[in-house]
Length: 176
Image (cartoon, rainbow, N blue to C red):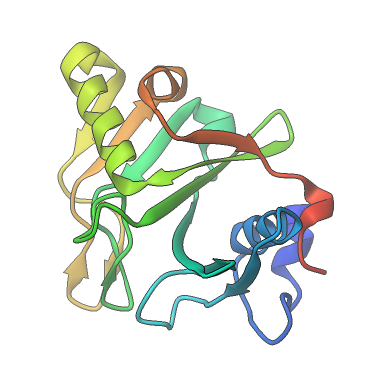
């Protein structure tokens, strides 16, 4: 069992609970000097609140479990969690989005403003459309809301056009 699976089984990050990727990102940000709180999916904002000096950031986190097996990123365009949009497209494209994935036993995350994810996706669609599969309705259903478009994109092709950060997450920098 790897560290991310172990983290799923315990309550972490002080009095807050979160998914393993949220706790891992929060711990890595904390080690970088940010004060972080994992907000969980019941809040009206985002998954992580990070503060440094007088600046405050809200981060939406997604865990893509299939990258290691398929070599593709899976992006839901809107998606909904408890009636808040959580996919790569949102009303505010200036907000921060993190997409966590695993390759060769190591965890990484793409992190940038949502607009950078959208721009990279548009460029892949324009220049290399054979590297993208588009699904108009996803598996995700919450109440009467069905997640809409999903894009399955070749990992290396997406990374070629992505202008945000692609960083390895350190397992020792997680909340215990």
